[in-house]
Image (cartoon, rainbow, N blue to C red; front, side, top):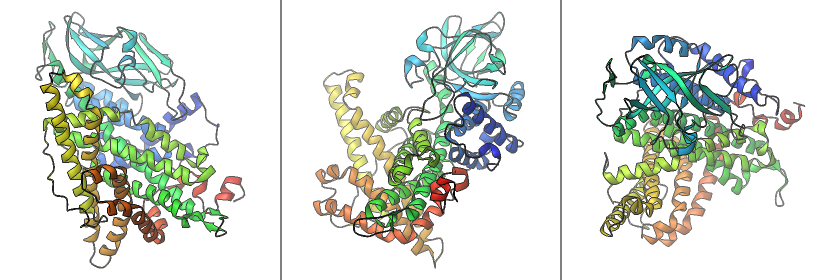
Length: 577
């Protein structure tokens, strides 16, 4: 599937602008043509997630097109049009990529928030249709990737349903945007200047009286009578909006998978190159750079982050879809934030550790770092997700603060995964208490909810970050335990190597907050001072296994196409291999 000519490496500048966009959709149709049949990919998670992972490694722009088409567009039809035979032809079109799916949610004047969508879909009872319009410049849909010419598009558009002059809540509508000849009547697609970070055909889209057939209303369990009477079991526009926006969960899972894959590719390529790149050092000539401790800190730290991201992806993107409980939804979006930050850090470290060659586009680090950077704000902004998570934690929504049971300072092993988790639990419980006390004090002072929260957002963000970190550390502890028990002969040794690798991530996280832990009496001065030496000791122990650990990530080097991953990287870069 991914070895076809359409995926061959392109020389820098060979595909630019419209040619690059066309290549993305050519690749999408190529992949889609080989996986047609059976259930929709969004429902076949054991096929979907590996395809998303390989797509992200091959071409981050293809990943975007894949998840928007299969997860968000097809997912919306299945989610909010379940059991409707009148949408069977739509699903067939999407399955065959006769039209490529797109998602139009965010609006130019409202940042990354979908809580105040102003695009209007007004019901015309006389004709049994909806009229879609953009009432003001701030309501322009921005910036969906739908500008590529010659590609028929079918969009899921988030709009405010208006019936008989009353706003009834946010719903998704299927809207054909363009055919092979261009935008359809009433649809204005204004291409945006391509970003150097990620080659997407971004656009600003507005609507002027676009008529939508009744069947293209993804009404879920709401209904309209023939005379225009509206009924919604959810009872209020606010609850309906939350139900509609639950669609974004497909994007969170996809993002975790794609980010983990590119983090793995970045780390594996850099570690592989570090064993082959030689330097004439002042104290030792002609050594591979992997022998230098500063390089080990960077490269093994990247490798550790890649393994953490993979473990989080396995725990998040499970073969069976998780239940739509508040806890499961919150955990999923927090794992998107965590994996995004890890992937961006891994690709940056891998690029920096590869010297000047790390900046060559052909070596892919910039592609992968840009991909992670772009996902900071995609599928809901990371900071907004952290604040939403903190508010839910404070409200006690399917949540109880963890127990305060960390072993006393000076009496524990900082390489013990249970200790990592216990320290994070104490930090989480303390931050939860401080945030609750801060809000209580603000209420006693008579502050408005805005003013109360406005002074506590930093504390709220730290609470959500710590909660997410504790969940991740629990995943790491379980992974070490599973490997240890996997085989009586080899399990303990393998678990020791895995623990050392994951400890790099855990100790770096601990060091980021060592001042807080020291002030709270949860670490003593000797423990804080010991962390750098512990990191060096871990690097020394991991050096014999580093290349094997990189290979175990299973990265398809031919698909990455990075010349520095080649055994003879000099020959690969000069064309003399």
